[in-house]
Amino acid sequence: MRKKNSTVNIAVVMGGKSSERVVSLSTGQQCSLALKDLGYTVTEIDASIDIVQSLSRLNPDVIFNALHGQFGEDGIIQGCFEWLGIPYTHSGVLASALAMNKQKAREIFQLNRLPIANGFITDSKSLLQGHPMRVPYVIKPNNEGSSCGIYFVHEAANGPPQLGDDLPSQVMVEQYVKGRELTTTVMGDRALGVTEIITNGWYDYDAKYSAGGSRHEVPAALPDEITEACLDYALRAHDVLGCRGVSRTDFRWDDNQGLDGLFLLETNTQPGMTPTSLSPEQAQVQGISFGALCRWIVEDASCQR
Image (cartoon, rainbow, N blue to C red; front, top):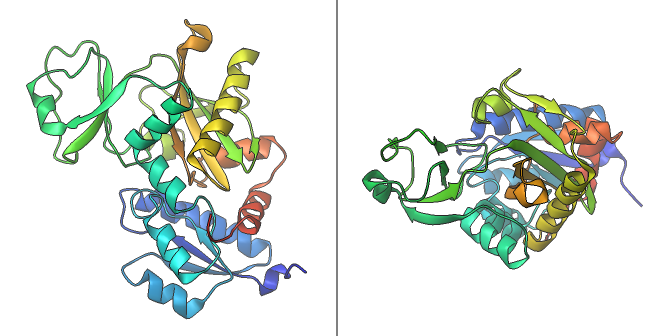
């Protein structure tokens, strides 16, 4: 028999030390409020070096993983949850590690005939010597999210990119796909829909998380063929990576090329749940309130994911 909400003790783990700490705090706070409104007993934990001790003392029924970025959605913290034997939300150790590593994820997508743009891993220092591929292209860390540390080298660039000190020694270089920014959320075995993200420029960190930074058209006004392809590709990406719970897959679509112009960029195993985030918005359009989405995520929690 299922416990009443008031007797279910949930630890919302958020914050941490990644470059996405601020986003994680917002996600955690929003989810905590929603879960409290549903009657759950909720404790917020700002993840730090003593996270294992904190969780051991609390011994919650469920861990709601609201962390983003390194150490939060790359399989590391998931291993701690498994060690403690406490059911947790979102994807498990392997799926989280694979999705966060862009090169590994690309290899899996390619093996499963999911369309991706040309790209490769290279030494960031070599980029100072010249263009690694035809412009335009994108340079990004191999294991970051939320568009952190991304450089766009446009067609007018007549020399090598001027990079900051924030890039790691190994980076992903990927051909830039012109066109429209699309995204699809998967909730279990169901793709929720397609959103088009409309901005005045690059869909960077500020465009994602600042109020008014971007406009979302949901459902996106697309040809049926493209909508169906996004839903199919997102479900397949979720499955081949081994994701659990909620994931979100991002695309670029060059509408001058039809279906051949649709490319999968990446799959996020722990989509944001902030006031400007995409996944709760898609759920809302499907008649799933924010609270209902949080409840579903909690009820989906388990170990050995």
